[in-house]
Image (tube, rainbow, N blue to C red; front, side, top):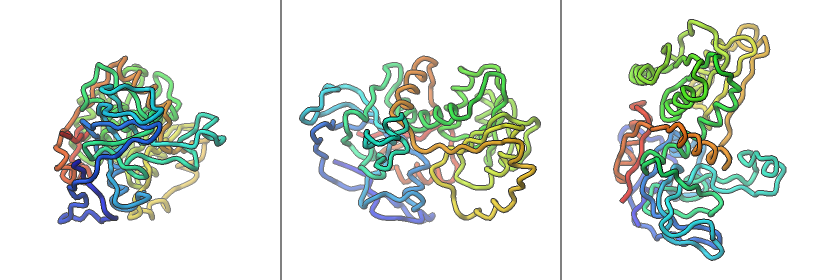
Length: 342
């Protein structure tokens, strides 16, 4: 099968293409696994974190991609949840132990044995992928394959972040960064919190204009001060500086939710500008989003179908994965990027 393979950490400079097109064996499903013929795979900023070493894969070579949509081609022995031809999706969570206190308490995202699709197990930048049947999800019929792919990470992780924000209808919320996850959170906000005003912070004019098109009441640069204090802010950027500015934009008792797997080191010194009295005092809170649970994915897919949420999509061929990733790195974003496979 064809796959775009990462063979080692790369700085992904302007002249480099970190993923190589290769012919690799079709994986064989294990006892309780299914083999999926991949149709689409979303492109996520986490792939840049893997390529550039901020959250390095556990082995090389590795096939990236954790927003997989395809059809069941084969089931392993004792795999009974799905039939051949069923359309299923795979998300970031690839496995967890199922027996630790975190797993038993519904927080399998914090399990010590948590493994990630496309980081610890081969992902969807390929014609086929395998996954445990308990970690696959039926894709609602209302969505096309391309629409379903970004729902599995950008949507599900945005759903978790919004839940952690603890927002009530009518309270003001900020979104810092407006890529794949941000534009799906906006659609959830319009549905679940119709009285809430949404303020969007982004470094790029195109993202700010996109947010305005989707109903943001105000947009500005990540360093700007909002015209009103906010009850919550969800930060999806890879940088440190927006964390400090987001805290300044919170009202007393407000909550910042950081939805990023890693923060880039180059502006680490910005943390030194944190002023306790101004930025943290008065019971402001900071929460981080760590991975997702299967329940997050299942609940979000039901909500997305109910609304329904229609992600804005930019499609690329599998062989164009490096182009899609470079555009993501350069913030050339409007909605979600998806690889078309086969």
